[in-house]
Amino acid sequence: MQSCDENSWQKDLRDVVTDPEKLLSLLNITPDEYLKHFTARKLFPVRVPLPFIKRMKKGDFSDPLLQQVMPLAKEFVVTEGFTVDPLAEHDTVAEGLLHKYKHRVLMIVKAGCAVNCRYCFRRHFPYQDNSPNKQRWQSALTYISEHSEISEVIFSGGDPLMASDDHLTWLVTQLEKIPHVTRLRIHSRLPVVIPNRITTSLVNLLSNTRLKSVMVLHINHPNEIDGYLIKALELLRQARIPLFNQSVLLKNINDNSTTLCELSEQLFDAGIQPYYLHLFDPVQGAAHFDVTEQEAVTIANEMLATLPGFLMPKLVREIAGQTNKTPINLA
Ligand code: SF4
Image (cartoon, rainbow, N blue to C red; front, side, top):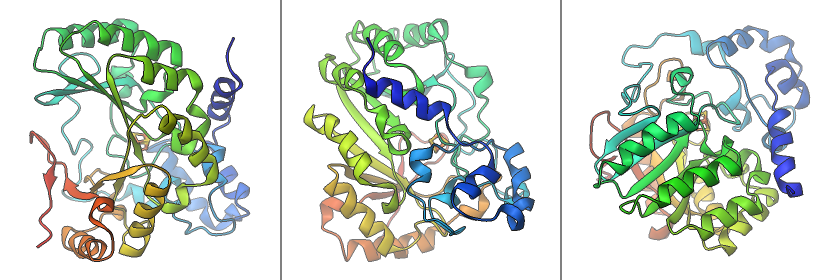
């Protein structure tokens, strides 16, 4: 029998808001003056779960959470240097498997996400060609078993936690049979936007596997952290699953040291270790989120002067084809 938790996250998923007019109405924002933006949903569909909407400020179109998910007419602007595949990820080594780093592979466990973030570097990813199922996972598992240098498997997507706990259990069980795989990392934004996704069965799976499990969350702004999320994460903390966070530096969302210092403090209070602050990946349709490297360095230096070292995320850029993330020199 499924727990109440498991039913509720799937209900939240079914209830995601996909209409920008409804999204604005829920926030007491009259849609009329924003109609010109709505067609940008054709470039990348709108998806926003209600628990995330509840953390937005009513009546404020510039709310930093709303601006991460609201389609804007600016997305039609074609910007030189911005591409549909900024990290050259569209070539997979097996179906749904990316092998960018020597000892780690990234497995597209599930196409699609609970939330569609407008700045997403995978907004053009051909998920329809990489729509995972057990047969496709099997091809990825075969590749992993034949490459003994792979010690860590990263579940990604889309969002890997879109998969049911039963499917995740099957997949983890298969990975456990491959002796050289010792670590499982889950990259997910789903618990942030639907905290009920942290079910007891998921926690049991991660804490009972022989693989060392790590979860990397994706939180960009302190307003994304509320009591509901903190309470859900408590289950993972009690199970001693290490929690890390990565953020993306985004224009007019979090591009100042005050916001980012507050984010680090709140992450720590919630038991999450700040890990990476990513420079924006130049994906076509989202250039309005870009923060220059020079601006990023200024912000990071201000953070360094304010935060204790252990709360300072590493400022990095991902460059297609490189074997690791590139740290940005703050000097
Ligand atoms: S949750 Fe992650 S992968 Fe999904 S749209 Fe947002 S940034 Fe992209």
